[in-house]
Each structure stands twice: as structure tokens, then as C-alpha cells.
Amino acid sequence: MALELRQNLKLAQKLVMTPQLRQAIKLLQLGRLELTEALQAEIEQNPMLEEAPALQEQAANPEALNAEENLVQNEAAITDRVKGDDPATVAEINWEDYTNSFDTDLSFAHEAPPADTPSQFDFISATPGLTSFLQWQLTHLDLNEQDADLTRFIICNLDGHGFLEATIEDICTYGNCSQEEAEGCLRIVQSLDPAGVAARDIRESLLLQLDRLDYYDTLPYQIVEQHMNLLQARNYAQIAREIGTPLKKVMEAVAVIQELTPYPGNEYSNEQTNYVVPDVYVYKIDGEFVIQLNDDGLPQLQLSSEYQQLLKKKGGLNAESRGYLRENKRNAEWFIKSIEQRQRTIYRVMESLLKFQRDFFETGPAAMKPLILRDVAEDIGMHESTVSRVTSNKYVHCPQGIYELKYFFSTAVPNADGDAVAAEAIKTRIRQLISNENPAKPLSDNKISELLAKENMHVARRTVAKYREQMKILPVKHRRHND
Image (cartoon, rainbow, N blue to C red; front, side, top):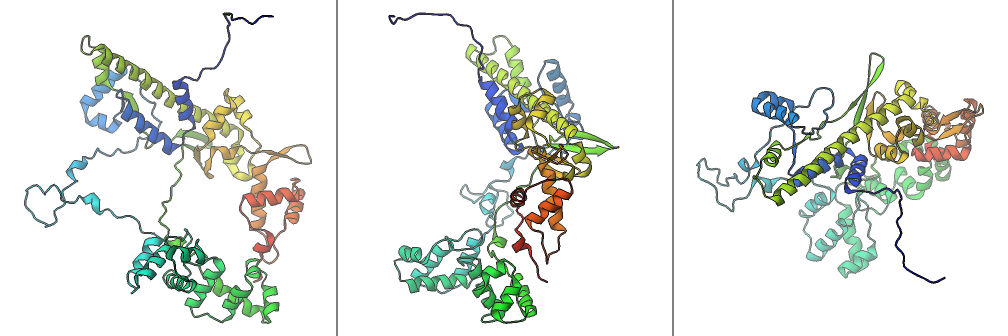
């Protein structure tokens, strides 16, 4: 058969990922903070988009209220507001009134300051951390040039816990010095506050702190130096036997050690804490649960009335400008529609989760039921991938606390009756058993498995160990207290 070129007509259906569809999918999976940044970026890029004035500003400004009414009449798309009270708005600040107004001579004259006068923003300070605190202490020491350089190198190689990540060989290589000189500079840094800083591990950090407290060559120092493994395992009886001292003395020494700080650098951390802001609230009012989307902090978008009037005027714009505004208008309308669709989807998913996990919202995690993405997807008539995107990085505030929407999906563990128990309910029960155990005789994984079996939750010992590790609960040897 000879090879030849032919032209054929073929009719087929396929999914085309348009830029608008990609944008809608991207907005759907964004978290709250990322969504706020995306809204601000779109407002800056698209001239047809602007932030709608708050209701309080509209009431105070009748002209703005009339403009809003005209905008609705002109079919301008505005994002739906969440039911409830709107948050108080902050007036726009003109920072030009504050910048470059610093007068170094503290003069009360009204003349303009020189152009090279420092701004007030030049004096905004940053939160000092461990490195700056240690370097500040070094400025009070009389060090030669080599020691100052080596100590700065040591300080810059400390991790967030205050432990030294570099070795003595690294210090020698950097400073081209001997091992004695490197160790001497390390002892200088270890003599600074906080006590225990620049240690190589927890054991050395505790020893440095005990030495600073004049506990050198005492029972607490001996326990940390020679029996650190037994101390971590809380095997105080074995420590007493090996040292040859009464258990009571060992417990007194352990009490001294427990007052120390294993990670001395943590209290000087300058990391900022980011708190979770829920995307949706669930309230219980008169025995019924009410869902409310959280729209605080999100700009309410609308189409620009001024640019829309320009488009309506004939001959006011050239063809290129008119085409540019029309294209941005279509993009703005699609963007607003995507935001509205995102909010509606979150509401519908939360409504479905509330239906499936109502017992959780009533009593707590122990009543969690098995649930998968397919159950919610079939309930609201959407694809599983859509539900997965909606529940990622989205949080709900309910009477039980703040939870990620992914939390409500739990695998099923069959019991003897053929029914299924949610894995999260089993984890909650394991956590309760361990919190109520006798500290002198903590429950082993095998014992927890037997107790769960009596409650009709047949879970293997390996599964108990896996759940315990996921909840960051220590094994039995580290939970034992011989008080």
C-alpha cells in the first residue's frame, strides 16, 4: 500500500482549557490570603475593575449612592455581599502627608525640609532575633580581629534552636586557625546569654546551663553527662541503680533538669506567627446550624462606571482604546463571575459537609463518620477534583473549633458488626485513652488495641502505633513517670 497525504474531516469533542477556565480553577484552589493578593493584583492590572465603596461610605455620600444605583441599572456586576453586618472600613490614607516630614533640628518653622532629610520610614525597626542579640553582646567584649571574626562566623552558623551547625573543622577552615583557637572562640560564644547557646546537641546545652547554675560535678550534671539515654526514656529507676543513689535523690535531680531549656534559642525567635482566618463560619442558633461565608478583608469588586460611560460615548475613543476597554471589561466580568462561583461552591460544599458530619458539629470529633470526596461530589453534583480544590487550604470556624475542610474526610475502618468507623474517631479515642492513663504505668500500643476492641473498634497494634505517631504522641517508654 503506497503512502499518501489525505485531507479528512473529523468531528470530535474535547475539553479546551481557555484562559478564563484556568483562571476560575486557580481562584477555586486559592487560600484566603492568596485570594486577597489575587484580587488586589487584578484590580491593579485591569482598569475596568475597581473596589466597590462600603455601605457606610455610600450612605455618607449621596453622590456615590446615586452612582451605585446607576451602576446597577447599567448591569454592572458586583460581587455578592455576605449576609450580616459589614466590617468597619478604614479611610484611605495619603502617605504623602507623612513622608519626608522629619525635622532633625526639631524646628517649629513651616519651611519645607531639605530633600535629603531622612524619612520617618527610615527609622522603622525590625524585631531583633538571636543573631542580633548575640552580636550585641560581642560588642561589649574586648576581642582581637581574629576572635571577633571567628565568633561572628559561629553566631551566623546557629540554627533557630541556638545549636551550632558548623564543626570545629569548619571554623578552622574558615579562619585558618588552630583547633585550640577555634574551641576558644566557641567557648566565648557559649558564655553569652542565653545559657546553652552554641551547643552541638541537647546534652551539651543542658550541661552548659547546669554549669552556669553552679551544678557542675553534682548529681544533675552526672545524670545528663553519663545517662542521657535513660533520662530521655524516663527510666529513673535504672539511673538510680547504675549511680548507686536512692530514687528520691534521682527524682530531685530530674526536677532540677526539667527546669532547664532544651532549646535556648527558641525564646529569641523573631518569626512571625500567622493565624488562620476561617473562610466560612458555622453557628448554632436555636438548635439549627447556620452557614455564613467570611468576606471580611476581601475587596468587593465592581465595573468602573467612568470607563463604561466612555465606551457608551460615540467618537470619544479611537478603535484601539475602545477594543482595549472592551477586552478588559470581558475579563473583569469573567473574574467577578469566577469569584462569585468560588463563594457559592464553598457554601455548597460546607452545606454538604454539615449534612454528612452533623454529629461532629453536635458532639465533637468522636462522632466523626467515614466520608470521601465522592460522597460530597455526588451530593452537590460536582466532580471530585472540584471538591478537592475547594477543601484545600480552606478553614471553617464552628462550635468545636477551627478545622480545615479536608479534616472532615476520613477513611472507614470496619468493625465486627460490619459497620464502619471513621479513622479520625479512632484517633480521638486513642488520644482520650492516653490522656487518662496512669503516668506510672502508661498504656502500650497492644493494650490500647485491646481496649478499643472492647469498644467494638478492632484496630491492629501496628495501626494504633501509626495513628499515635501521626498525632505526635510519644511511645510508652517516653511517657512513663515514676513520681
